[in-house]
Image (cartoon, rainbow, N blue to C red; front, side):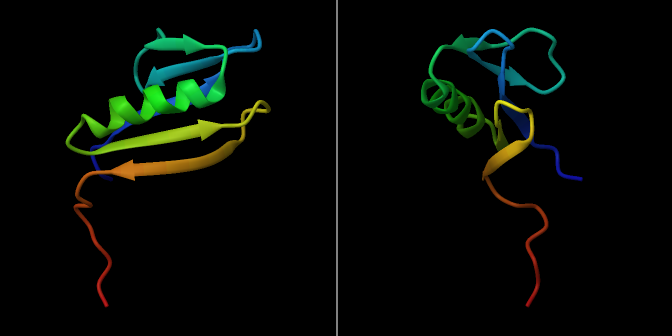
Length: 77
């Protein structure tokens, strides 16, 4: 498995959105607007050698993902 810095955008349970780096218990930031949370998450992930943003819907299911940096295992063919 690749060693990516994973940044989650998830509902905070109070109508806002948390930006959390995987493995940390505290949110890096909290926003009222989901678009602002996504922008912050992308900034964090893009500043890592290999980053990934995982965006959740209000119900907790995954909406979309973005990856940044060189893929260490590109497909052949």
